[in-house]
Structures are given as structure tokens and as C-alpha cells.
Image 1 (cartoon, rainbow, N blue to C red):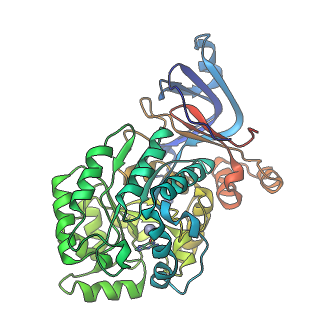
Image 2: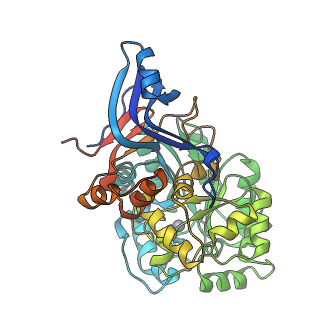
Image 3: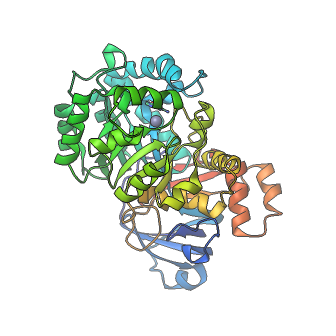
Amino acid sequence: MFAVPTSHSGLIAVHADLLHFRSDPGPQADPGSYEYLPDGLLVVENGRVVQLGPYAQIEPSLPEHTRMLDYAGCLCLPGFIDTHTHFPQTDMIAAPAAHLLDWLDRYAFPHEARFADERHAAAVADFFLDQLLQNGTTTAMVFGSVHGQAAAAFFRAAQRRSLRMLAGKALMDRNCPENLRDAPGGGYGETAALIEIWHGRDRLEYAITPRFAATSSAAQMEVLAELAADFPDLPIQSHVAENLSEAKWVAKLFPSARSYLDVYDQYSLLRRRAVYAHCIHLDAGDRARMAETGTAAAFCPSSNLFLGSGLFDLDAMREAGVVVGMGTDIGAGTSFSMLRTLADAYKVTQLKGHTLGALQAFYLATRGGARALGLTHKVGSFEPGMEADFVLLDTAATPLLARRMEHASSLEERLFVLMTLGDDRAVRATHVLGEAVYQRDAG
Ligand code: GUN
Ligand code: ZN
């Protein structure tokens, strides 16, 4: 089922219905925002897209040695991009709790303590990455535990699979169990050492990873400001404004801040490639500041519904000009599937009085995610030169999908049915740099 890609050389041509986005289709489904090539051909050389177009037009001109991959009838999209997830929470997915802070204490922290054991971390990283690939996700921004060795184990597992991944060890020095703390005001040295080894190695990037304002002292926030200044191109990941009690607590911990988001602003942690998960309890001033600084939001509908945190306001974020990507937020989120996550996103927007169109949803799960992570020049679309990570979706994967699809007349309707009824069963194959790394039907 899973394979480690061995070579990225030679010419590969993928026969499928191709879909990718140039920009956000928005609620009006702007037809100029995407390219749809039913019965198309995607040509890949040395792991990169070189050409795409109608099968009938391109196929006759291909050299004889081209490896043809026949996925006719499947929908081929750039691999999904998960802008917020936690690999050390894989084993405690689906754990019920009253709310976020209760859940952190009862499940997240105790499970993360096990990541002091590097072998455990390596085993979970392998399983976690296989789950991503089985669900068609090829790039993710990933939280580690506080342990540097566990983050290194994650990077090694991602490197073995040739994946484009962003990850970091969590920084936390208070309000968490003793065995999960950096030294007071600590974390700089261990983070800098990991950056030195892993940032820019193959397809990996190091993300500066403060867990959230509540678990960093003012001294550690100073360290974070220093790290951000010393490594200005690095991505940053954290959490903000997820839960009302959490927000009240942060207001007490940082009384001079205007808002929860402002804590991060005070320490210069709002910028391009900084991705904050949740962003539910924000005000107009916060949204304007995110837009102004190029800071992105990870919309994590499954997690927000599961913990009862609240409803993300996608329309307000779009109107304010905030960049948004999708996040599964494993393990508060209850599925690795981006399709399931989009289904939850749709329901959240309905409750907010808006409708999330299917084209906009698939944009958010692909190019929108790449934009949030500052990676539109590498992944998230099929423009020539892009890295050839892609997913093949089988629109007739289950009897119900097959029946419902018979009544789907437009691309948008097909996509909507896929995201509403689909899950990992609809992922026929996942390719990384052109090579198959997951095949649903392989023995
Ligand atoms: N806030 C701080 N840590 C976490 C976490 O692990 N999960 C979620 N959902 N929110 C957080
Ligand atoms: Zn999270």
C-alpha cells in the first residue's frame, strides 16, 4: 500500500480529470480562478510538473519511454495541504472532554510526555505520515511535543518519504506538567540546533513553534521574539483565540495586551508564514492586524466542533483579507481526511449564515494552504515547475458516492458530493514528486 519513492527521474504522464487553482474562487466561484481539464494529461519530469493539457492533444507528442499512469475517470488535484496538526496526538484522537483546557490536561499533555522516548516518537511519526498519505495530504505544518529528539524523529520520517513538511518542537515553560517544560525562559538553543540541522534539508522546513501564549512565560516570549528576528524567513506556528476561557486566562497572564492576538504581536510573532490555528474569538482589529502583517489562520472545523470551541468566521476573515488554510488539528480534530474536514467546514459556515462553495473549499485545501505556508512557488497547483505532489480521487469509491454522482451534473456538484460523502476510501492514490507513495488497491 505504501511505498518510499526511489527515483524522481524520467518522464511520467498522468491521465485523469485535472483540477487546480490559480486563486481563491470566493463565494461567487470565479471561473478564472481555476483550471479544469477533464480527460487531461499531467506531464512530470524529475519530480516537477512540465506540462498539462487535454490528453488527446498532448499524448501523441510524448516520447516513447514516457511512463503512462492511467487514472482515467479519477479527479487529480494537487496533494492536500494541512496547515495545522499535531503528530504526538495521533494516539489520543477521539478523546472526549469538557473543553480545550480540560482536554489538554487529561489527554494531550500525558500523551505528549511519552515523546521523551525517541523510538516511540519515530514509530508514531511513521504511522502519522502514512495516515496523511492515505488521505491524500502531501504537505503539513506539524506541531511536535516539547522534545527536540521527537521533532528530529519526525523530520527523519518525512525525509525518508521525500515529503515537503514543516514542523517544530513545541516551546513551553509554564502552565504545563514539569516533565513537559523547557527551562524557564529556555528553548533558544535546542530550537536553533534543530534549525541548523533540519531547516532547508531536502523538502523540510523548521517552524518556530510556541504552543500558545498561556504556556510561555514573558521570558520565553522574549526568546521567541529573538528566534523570530534571528530567523526572519522561518515559518511560525501557534494557537490563538480558540476558547473563551483560554482567552480570559491569557488576558490575565498578559494584562498589557489589547487582545489575545496582540500578545503575539507584542513579541513580533505576526508576519508572513506565521500560521495561527483556530482564530475564533477575534475582533475586527485582530483581523485587520493579521491581514496587514500577512499572518495566516488555520481553519480547524473538526477540532472546533469536537471541543465545542466555537465557529470560525470564514467570511469575516476573507473580507478582512486574512489568508486562510485548512487544518485537521489532529488529535482534537477527529479525522485525518481533508474531505471530512471540508464537510465540517461547510457545516460551520452554514451556522455562520454563509455557504462555503465546493470550489472555494478545494482551493482552501490546496493552493490556499500553500499560500498560508508561503509555498505557492513549490506546491498547491499544477503550474509548470511546481513539485509534482498530487492526489487521485475516485468519485465512485463507495456505492453511495457512485449513486449520488450519477445525479451530479457539474464539476462543482461533483466536488461538493465528494467533500460531503468522501473520506480516505475516495483516495485512489497519492503521488509525491511524481511517484506513487500510496495506492488504495495495491495488495
Ligand atoms: N492550544 C494549546 N495547545 C493545544 C493543542 O494541543 N490543541 C489544541 N486544539 N489547542 C491547543
Ligand atoms: Zn493545535
